[in-house]
Image (cartoon, rainbow, N blue to C red; front, side, top):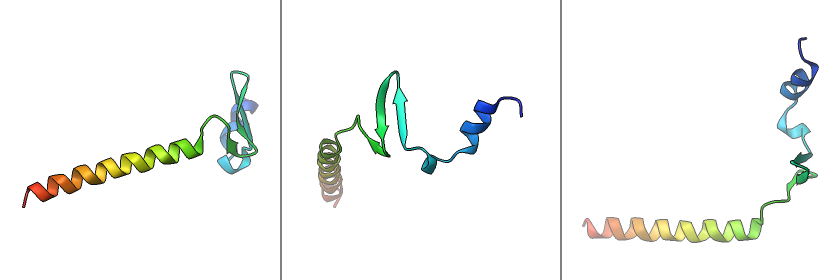
Length: 64
């Protein structure tokens, strides 16, 4: 083993990570992301999905 820290990092799986700090800020707390507003993200994804559907529906309707 050349570097024990590298060995530790690469031998662990994502299911073994529960807390993560980046630049002194906790971004994963008990397996839950703390930096993302999940409700707002889901609203945005839903809105984008509707726009994609409308675009595709309009595009395929005009081809017939």
